[in-house]
Image (cartoon, rainbow, N blue to C red; front, side):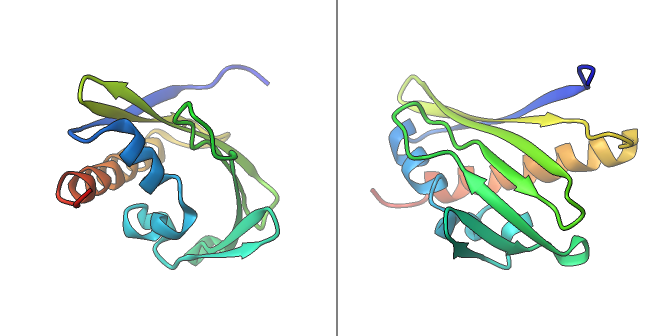
Amino acid sequence: MPTTTARIVHASIERDWRDVYSFASKPENMPLWASGLASGLTRDGDDWIADGGPIGAVRVRFAPDNTFGVIDHTVTLETGLVVENALRVVPNGDGCEVMFTLLRQPDMGDDAFEADAAHIAKDLATLKSLMEHRGS
């Protein structure tokens, strides 16, 4: 498979990276900031199941807890399409950067790619707002 178009969507958050990672990496918290998972996640063994709305149920598997700020996750759609998502929280001074690497999927047009990038930016802005206004 050839390399595809990629875009890193990020947000700077004025909060210690460990606090952001601790909050953002918990599947139970994701519906609070990741609008694609707004319906919530239900645990199913090592995976989590989310109602993907018009695309049906999706199966999500997260990277195990780690000390590196990695919140990578694999999303498997009902169609069988598997999407690998790289999500990282890294220190930046007293705050952090949260970075999502968006990879263009096969047969994805420019408009859909831009819409995905905008959707991720909105979610990261929500995470930023939650973390900067949330108590310790």
